[in-house]
Length: 461
Image (tube, rainbow, N blue to C red; front, side):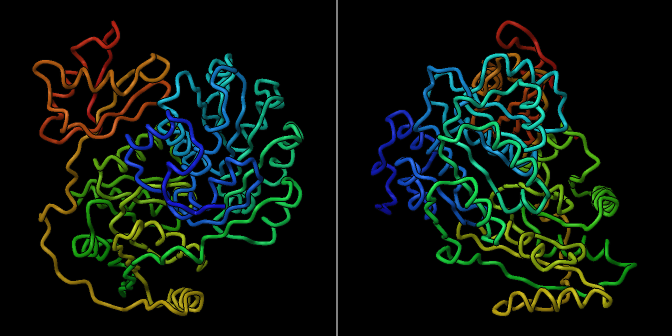
């Protein structure tokens, strides 16, 4: 099999290839170059690759290549361990498929009412992306039909097993036809992955690029703190080493909410992501952080699973996690795509054993102790340059990003280069604009009709 990095070397349709160029895909990543030829050939694959390696585009292009857009049946199912990852995968699949008319991608996850999902299932989607529990519930109610399924993808399969989804996965497989392609994507290759591969795949091709990928360039350090000064030291560390996008990890949702509230009280636009948020609020938090209208996301490990925001400048451990693997997973969200990253941990004396365990797991890595230098607040690095507006209409109102962009830039509107990302959900949309144009953008979106009707727009604070 060729490992050319040129997308043109693949037997992809002209619509897919043309769209890749429009999206800025210039050449394949390592996992794409190794996996895509086999995916297109029709093989079952077991792929081990780190988060951020380009695996979503790999399996996305593979399943879109074989999809029949004129047949309205569910031909591909992608299972993800978390709602956040499912949303991100579905969003990427829609981007990859936008040059193919009438492709329908549907997300089915817990946290949303079944009734609203039933309406979207009336006309069978081509691709379903979802979490195992909710998919199994729909299969049991016969509202999802997998009889014409061609491709089953288990994304982050190791994490699904870690989260206890093995029974759900086995039950879902009973509904799937035996004649299909099955692709497993995993960051690690434990025995449990080998076992499930043996049960659900036919002569799979193993592709492991974890050792071939260049190590992330992450400067790791730790700073001594006390129980009483931990919040203040985090604030100082953010001013000293923080950038435009920063992740702060807490071990509990109570700490998560308290730290975010403290940072907000100190003039930093910080958002909390934890298990007590409902789905609509989680969507809003993730959108505001990824579109750069908040500079700090304070998260628990469980809530941050599936988070895939590129170009995170620094990761701060408000406290170290009990497991060394969790630390590695946390800091792996910075220093991607050849960029320099930073990981700073705040440690009390009683927590030094956790640092020792991490250093045992990473014997070739130096985690340096250092004091937090004084830095002047107000240098602009922690000040978001974008503002998010929420629009009261979404995909169910047949809105598209181009509709919102057109209204924003219509006569007397704002310049197109001032508009950032536009994210559509079923009942609402989020639009990022440069701060200076926020009020004008709100007026444009509220006063001008979109597809014959008016929608409300409000600035998210």
